[in-house]
Image (cartoon, rainbow, N blue to C red; front, side, top):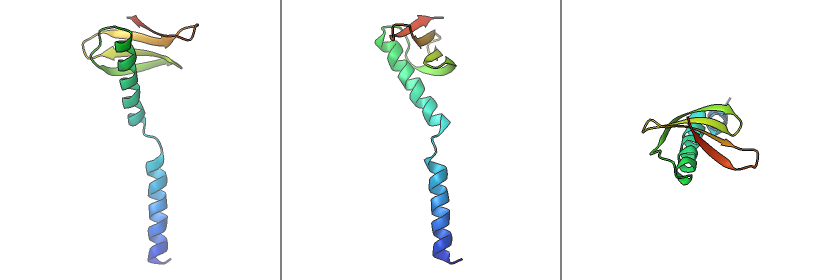
Length: 84
């Protein structure tokens, strides 16, 4: 194998590895989304620091200030946050 072929193979394998979505990035986006939802619903939460997935579109969110909320989509299709 020539050096350019090896380099190309290495670059393509690195691109494939790095292009897969990172679970940590998804978690960060989810925490930000849950923070936004809770704040838009007028509930006290300065920042969601952790979330546990119960089911699809159903999470238990723990806020930095100690509050916990169940954030889910109800039967009418509305997002609801219930204090736990």
